[in-house]
Image (cartoon, rainbow, N blue to C red; front, side, top):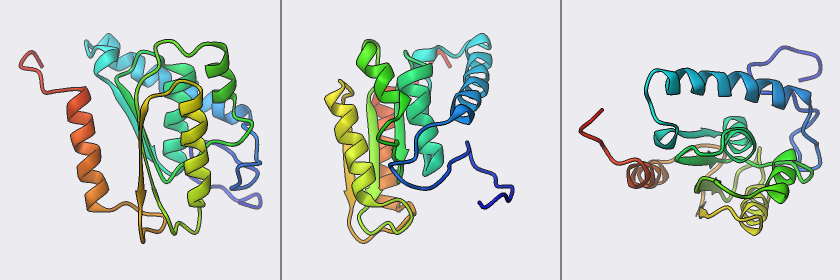
Length: 166
């Protein structure tokens, strides 16, 4: 942001798959993991928590689910990507046990986060053992649509069905 303040999840030198992770990713992940731990301490089982987001929020969700919070019910990322040298890939190369399933979607004409970046991220995660689904959304820019949100809701419900105990 050329030195200007911004309300994003972590600092990036550029919006590009060539931009490596930096220290702010880990710092933010630590803070978010503490928030999740508060929920667990209040009685919500970790395996009933799904973490996800849109754009940078989805990127952060990928970091949380595949590097910092193994054992959650699932991860979703919409119009998101990881850098080619992401530490998430390193973490999965070392240990791909207990990894949650993934729901990813991406607009095929996204002008901010190129469609190919999201697709490449999904393909790499899949190669490292992540199971999931990728939804290509024709005609969609850097935004969400009702059809994809409906699919996401069905996916969430399939992973964490309503419980009479809650």
